[in-house]
Image (cartoon, rainbow, N blue to C red; front, side, top):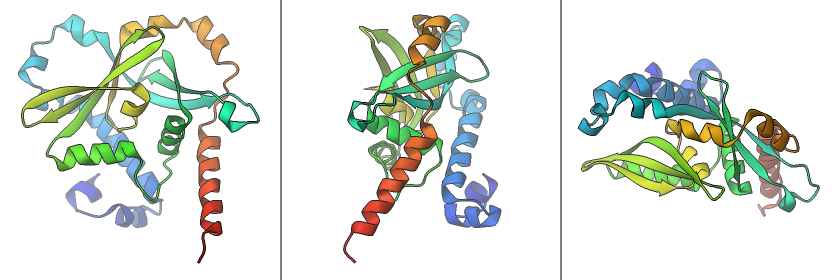
Length: 223
């Protein structure tokens, strides 16, 4: 973070300095920002946040996207995908079923794969920043009729605003993710293991397949 934020080096310059990829630099910066965010809350909290009770604060648990799972049908169009949210510093997990496009975007993010053009999620985050605001956090709030609901908290000139979003879209923004602790009880540990058994971990496979498709498409383009 010192080279990028304090010395003003670009992603490529930092990558060259450490002998790593640009994607790895971006991933490490994202992890560092996520680790710092809870420590900086006391300096950026709004009056509403400062009046939050201890019970309300305990309701929210910080989570991370730990892996992407999918079924193994031969026809890719028939495969189902699951995003696993893992409690940071804990053992609880929450599976959320998502679409193939969201699964691909999250797998590339987890594997630190650099894309030639930004995904819609990165574009949206960039537009928010260009407008003088920032995405401070993502909240996954409730489960209703088998559908999970989330909101993206945007800090702007007029104060914090919450924007409704799908969890799979919201977590791809790169902001810290917090989950209502009540949601962990929606899936018991035994049912979780049974229900996920047909869904092997596929994060690396999805990223590798996406890279391969891009290489093949690039070779087929007229020169």
